[in-house]
Image 1: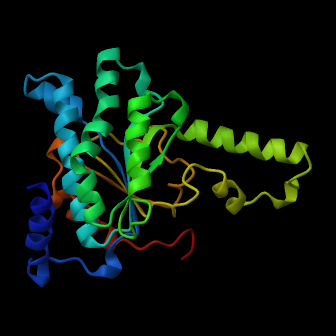
Image 2: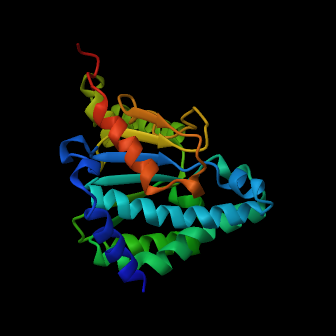
Length: 256
């Protein structure tokens, strides 16, 4: 049943009239999303925050399918930040179960649709059941060559950059690196995203207009797109609107 859902959605979207399509050259290679607003979405409906997170998990599937259909090569989802540990324990425990639940349901379909799962984050603090589920998905999809679905899980950009700088300092101290050799590429090689290109487009839902410690180095020249829509309500149509807006922008990287 689930495999048919992937196939049917993909087929239905592919059959859109050409005028509603997006030219391949206007599709960003790497899209990063700050998935925000699950709790507020639930509160507006008189539901517990956990219900919003569970509904948001369904949105992950829809947007992954759509990104894959459009030809996006990398999709990075901000699933849990290093600051999210400050939330109530019950909510944190629930959030730590979501990757396991999502992958138990969707892993076979991710494999069938040639999606490769990656994780970007600090593994040491994650519960064993969360980490083992993610690592199993990474291992089983390692040979896939389609969309890379990258979960930013227990991720914090400041910690990431501090660890990179500490590594550089240690290498200089031990004579393995000359200060003159430190450049953008050297720094990028030491980040958790070292195997990915920088995001071309950042999407944030729920109306918040900040980066929230997400990929601060990597987003230096990314296009930003914000929407008031809460993540559980974010649809393929909204995703397409963001892609279309991206295609209308001129990326100059400081040039003319």
